[in-house]
Image 1 (cartoon, one colour):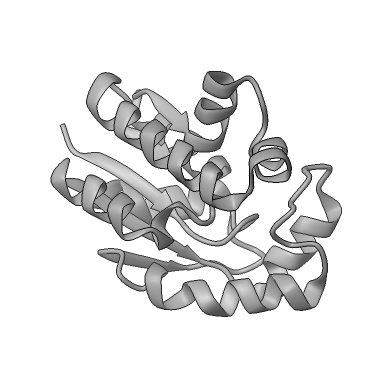
Image 2 (cartoon, rainbow, N blue to C red):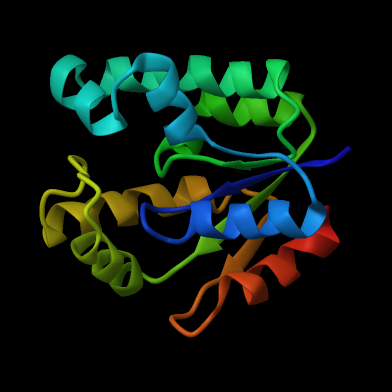
Length: 166
């Protein structure tokens, strides 16, 4: 069973697309942020606000390891910063996962961020979000596959590009 790990910047559509891929594969799906929230009893935003980003990243790595070693999830949506941590990329590689970067333009991500009710402490304003977006692109490009995302792409269209990789 090939696992698919979907990565990319916040609000690029990772969770939505991962759910659709899992639906089409009739497979289990896990959103790492949701898994971590359930495990910790707090949202990523709450963990970052209370304990700081480094503590959040440690908890995130532990959660990723648990998902990869103790669940049957075939499709995994990472958090926006998960892939930027070398240890997490190593974990994914050790578990022979196919990695797919949803490469959405910043303007699409930003519009979704400001339209969302999700608290995003790592994107407090457009300029900070843009700097983070730019700084993460080199890490995202390390994924095995890249799918360019446009505003008109549906989750079904994007999933149809991922399915042949599974």
